Length: 443
Figure 1: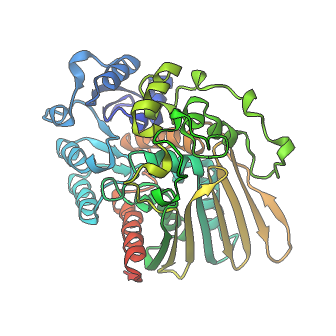
Figure 2: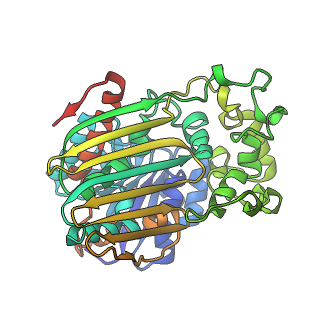
Figure 3: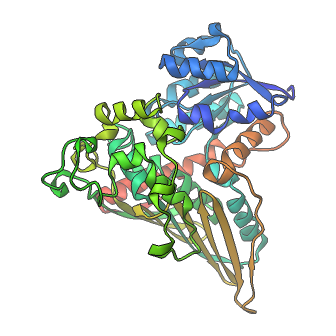
């Protein structure tokens, strides 16, 4: 296998463009993208320009690209959730190693079919469980495996989705309806369920789950709120979900970034929104998700015409829960609890692991990762030293991609296989069923 690899990208949305392949722009000696499939002509053209893809290697659909022969060593598949299975199976059949965005599929049989196809072909099918590659969770896993905490008894983990992210993705956005896209516990948190499985070090044995329905619904809408926030909502000054503030001013996101979890932020210490940069200089997510034109004019047009400009209480077809808890007993008796919720002041994850000899407490945020280990016998505490890398998911996106390329070259094994990824998805499907039917799932 050559050191410099070639790849194709199927789906040139935010993840296909910005999550992994920028690594190759900085490290062209390791590989290059030679083809792209993307139905949106503007996105397709922009991707081709950025990555130097020839016009004859730009395709409007993945079926044409994958209609043989094989063009590269690997395929990155970052299509919408419901469109993962067909291109992944076709790519494996042609002999591509596949890096597949999560969730791998929307049904358990489809997940199993993907894992079976990869095994049959002897190819890498790696699902993008990026948290395994985050410096924080790499360090946490080393502590757990070292035995420093003794026998692990409990794991408590939470994904604190910020109020504005929930409104953007799971009320106004593409994942707002669990029947059309997938349940939030799968779409958002198969990452976290994979992390529980990874840290526990054993398959699950029993699982149960509870959830609370969304509060962002018509019955809670202020009676005088317009259909669109930009039409002059009288509650704009107090509504945390105001779309104008979210996308034109990007105030909620910038306030989130300014916060630090270890500080008690008093009113006098909060940044003045007037001092924050405007959306005119912010052309990435979430603004880039509402329009390909991130100029002030493009954003205003999106607020007037697209789903993202609607009053969050009047969307109508959003059914993703406001919160969900999942309790899992693993086969090695590790007892884990996971909370997914939608009302955090700050986007991030928190983890606590307790063993017979010590405890570990960790925080994972956009610009901050930290963990402390406490020894039961001596009372001594120490902070873990973490590698520092910028970027989404705590810098883990490029770390995962770098490791994927190394695995193709035979230099290492992926941290997770398709067969292992099945467990996080099985837990998500089970949690959704348990919450809906009030049952306990056993394996």
